[in-house]
Length: 382
Image (cartoon, rainbow, N blue to C red; front, side, top):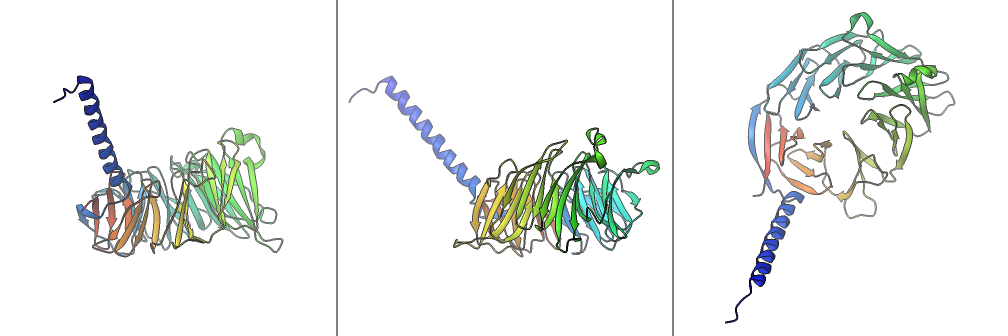
């Protein structure tokens, strides 16, 4: 028998180790890329509310539940973090960090929550149309004011000096402000004006700077863009220096902490079914033209006009959201979860109707809210 040299043994051992590492990587990759086939219940807490209560993601892995009778922040296990009581006919919520504002649209009342107390009541002079909160508790409010609308920023924690600034508007020249957005630090404001004086509906987005730089320009206006007859649906700030404007056929990204400037615009040629806002990106579900699949999902990182994700699928969903970097679809007693690259992680029937689904930011763990419980689940390979 021929003797095997030490060098050959070393080479064979290294090759065996490399093979094992490669096989392990393939297995792990397969597990990460979308082959979960079941789930197990990690924790279940009975719900003590009705199905009229709405839930929204809040400050990491927590949620806020709110209704016409009050609001509470909950941990995934159902522990109450803070609780606030009120009576509202039409509560609408906005969240930034640990702060939340809940406004009774059509009335003059709103509550601001700072993450530790039962809320601060603030009353406005005019009926509220929209309210947005910054990460230090300042609140921008769009109000109905007779022949025009009014936009103002308030500090709810300083009763003697609540008004921080007011945006001057001219209904004839500017039109009506119908949407607002503020930067997380509260120093930048974006307003969508709609003007119908020409007989056509014309949209214009205006950016205001209420920092030191804005004190040196007329009415604090630092930039603006006319969108013509393209309907502006919403404005969102994703950081102190980046905002995007959603339109009926796409979106436009603006960057600049002092003077926002247009970075790029994207036109979505297919019919938009759903818009998926996220903390640092935006997604669209459209009808998929020229494909055997029914829908097309595109996710944009806002750093580029090219989609980060471009996938097709045929899952008939009822709701969709971004949570923990993943895209979560739900429909009755089923759900579909895609990772940040658009790869399918899970698409199976559930044991109950899923009202809400939130990622817990941990591998394969989610908060599933049903009509009877808050349930933490973990995806598994059966």
